[in-house]
Length: 315
Length: 315
Image 1 (cartoon, chains in turn red, brown):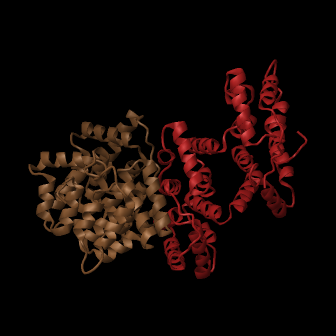
Image 2 (cartoon, rainbow over the protein chains, first blue to last red):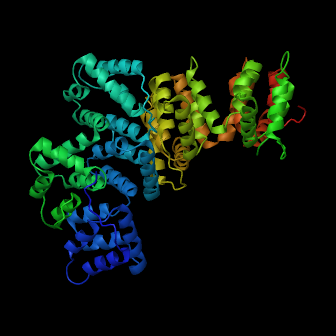
Image 3 (cartoon, chains in turn yellow, blue):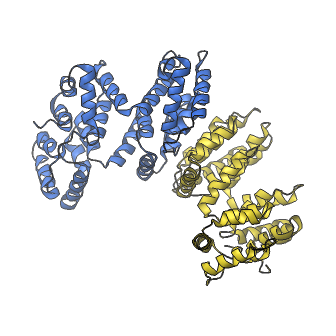
């Protein structure tokens, strides 16, 4: 369930006026902006963008970029995008980093249905006049490139039918490939990228039965560090996306120096979907609430915005 | 332009009755079946299938399979399918051969728009409860597998924008990769699978300027025979699909022992599209008409059917 609290009645025109008012004069009234946009769902935000364009002949994103700064600016500008367009923008930004963030690409590939992934790829082409696939190829190298191109390219089968024989034989293939140190990854990439999620879960279960340990644990000792971390992330995304995201939040919060991009991304992309379950899971695992954790790791208006999306009604 | 000659007025019910009549008694009246189905377009054939099902409570394909045999059976059963479904069936049959026919997969990937390819992949999943990508992976190995999975997976950018800098640098990358005998193919696969067709054509042009020879000629001397033949086929499909198909027809007709599957495939899949231009091209290059060539290579009802699709009104 969503954590976002949005009123049923709202007026896009009044919201546009209030946002514009918050941008007038010296300084910006960030709190006013948060109290509006932090309580509007995707359809409502779209109407506000349209109203703003109509009244002020200006793009709301541009306006907010010039008024806000830092993590709050990035978070709010991502938040007001259409979800599909936002996924395309997030993927593009992840690729353009000095060290591309493979997790964003894996999440794009695995947390969406084949049709949703396709919608993101269409939006990507519309925005950047190139395919997501070729940008993944341009910004990555080696095994990581092979993995990421393959998982974003495929139009995966979504049915529930599984072939137990294939699950068994591919669990063996995976076991063989992971033996002996340097993971080449040819078969694991092929299997993770082409098989349906239902089939993959059957294969992971077979793996555990045959080898007595989970496939993610088998991958832990691998020397080609980042690549095997990416494989583990992919497998976790497939097995249990909510648990994967909850763990990602934990890592972000517990690591030295919070990774605000990731923190914002998870909260923004899930606030209208399943952030409530993720909060419950977080509390269960960490004996403190996600709000407490976010509060202690962030400050100021950025903190207020994230807490608003987490369902806090104070702001 | 199409070669198919189909009447504007027709009655699906009468056609269904006539086909059923041709199937009655001892033997089958192949000529009657050809004279009907060989003169109906895709929409009309669909209506006939529906009418047949309604009147006789039987699937027309099943009925024809039991009445016809050999090359004619295969050709007519392919012909009466919806074009998108037919492409899925052709891809599946090509993969199931003892030596999978990579050309069919390359044609599926390169002769269609991204949306058309997607439609074929959807039809494939509907028919076989698996993705085309995973079946390509199951039936091929090595470099060929890497190439074929990549080209059928990608959702290619279709715009006309090109980046001359990328075209130049990738022409160099391709040149470097093809130096020195054993072609590994990592970069050529990445470029052929992810780049848009417009971008690829710019890259091939740059290749010729830099290296003084076309990329297909550079690939000719490569020792890993089938893989480099597949790369050449892919490049030809991108550069000029009609010329590629015309050449394919030449090879099929001139080689010892006609490859009826390929002959049927080209004629059936293009009869409603551009077979007329291909006939003209064929005549230009071979100083005899495609009809003459087909006549001398085939016999009986199968010959009559192919000639009918080629626009011959005798049958």
